[in-house]
Image (cartoon, rainbow, N blue to C red; front, side):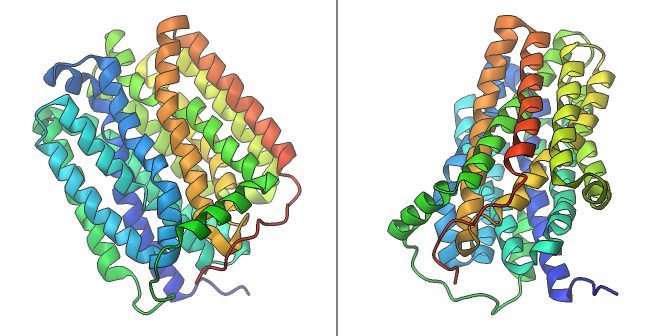
Length: 401
């Protein structure tokens, strides 16, 4: 009979789950509010949609710094500090009086959130054996996905009662709860004492990681999937409004479908691994995402968008969770740095995808734009199933202390 996870492991996952929930709750809450923010702050919808990129881009750009900082100071310490800064930035968003100030505060919030989920994944890579890691990370993703689900749904449903300022105030309170959980929940005396970050050594480590062909495949894969899958999210609310089907409430419910699909994946991850294996999981994930994007491209009722997003959430996590697990092993001696580069690629793709899909929507229309995204994600699933089928030797790196 196989022993279950140790109590210290369960405690670690519980603390990281609260932290991950807080960071993703903040990230997704702005998307249903795009139309309202555009009107209240006297902007246009396409500019307001870039508030999503204003969170994602600094999230990406901070990763090469946070990787070595997490290795040196301790991942638990950096996660805690980042959650505190996130809560402060979100508090400022609640009092923003103009679109420019809101952009600035979203940039700070995105950079702070960038120190939570990637370092949490690296920490689980340090503490949880590889044979249990995909299921463990899949369970951790439940909290991350619930943050997405409740962030977007909550923002859409409650905006009419408390306004967008109230939505930001509540996200700030959730960030503060995440900070408190990290501050008091992490075990004391675990891990090495803090040391000075060695950025010159970090550059050498990054070069070694990028020199690993498997790492390059994984970084390119998450960049492409982020563009193809997440580029439509901030534009969905204006599209639903333009069709006369509702506003933030309907957009929030539709976007919640994606997170519901992620929860479905988390519930089925053990069975999917057993019956599909890694290669078929990637192929099926690409097929499911492509079909969902085509359904959204048809511009039907918002309920159809919601159903398609459920399927897309399932397909996306079949791809993305597999990539996440693989990247924790490309550089075991510099795991935080490898995961940081992975997150850098993923969130650069998210930020760029908002602009690419926005231009495509205006240039070629909704169906053609999303058909292109569907083709990209389908090819990605097929290509990575072939390229990742055989394990590769890990990149060299300095041992984490």
